[in-house]
Length: 388
Ligand SMILES: Cc1ncc(COP(=O)(O)O)c(C=O)c1O
Image (cartoon, rainbow, N blue to C red; front, side, top):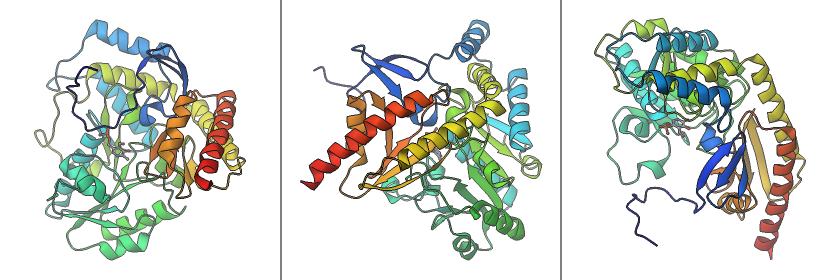
């Protein structure tokens, strides 16, 4: 084999996908797969979606880039739609989830006017650049890269009192995921967000919600905090927003927007016309019918998983179409996902023991049934070999 010039920062499967259509992916040998991972919660409307593709093509034929020095009705329109659907006042566009969290940290500190500490949670994931990495509550991502940015502390996920105890005079914000995606599809107690909202309001601290994995319909609401009937102060968004074209967004309340002045933050590519044209189409497609379909499909998948009755499954958790299946410690989720790939299903993991299931919203009951059948067979085989 020819020597690869690619940096070895990923452990890649040898499968290479050549093209896709709807929930199907095809590798370079022509083998067909059903996508239950959506490129890690990104291609939520599947591959080669005609309307989304045409939005990109139309914009490619028109204009690719001019910079943020000029007005953009495409950005105006997307910001308005996101604002209406989220209940947030203002939107800033960037290129990725990490960038959205970096901007959120900056906006919070600017608003804090001297207060700078941010409390996040153990097991969280917020990105790989220094601010986002410092907010991330998992040592495995820090190792080799310390010292981190000062001013971040981490408390157990799911506990409002742990946050309350960590607040100091310098605390400016609490940054949390509504469900920890990378951390293991961890779902907090139902009253967690409400409790945090009340605490942050009482202490005059910002509540920043990282919706990068859970947002844009994934849990059956436009943003997952809407399941808890709260309004955060800052929301970060990316992944599914442009169905695979890089984009990120920071949403904030008008109090925060008031302190951000021209020159405080920016991005050459942020709000790129192609990404924004596609995101406009994605938001139009994500109507109430689609959201209720996501909830129904999520229930089918969740009930189906509970119906598998396999001893090595320790826990099943999630909301809508973000679901984690945790195995007992003698079964590796990585082996299960590799065997599922051989069987023609793309599915991911979160840590060693959690299978992470993130199907596109266009998945059907039929494909869910096929997936559950294959999963049952593979888990049983792997569990049997392990118990021999
Ligand atoms: C919750 C969360 N925050 C932030 C990020 C970082 O996003 P990106 O990889 O687009 O920079 C991710 C990516 O997995 C994520 O799941």
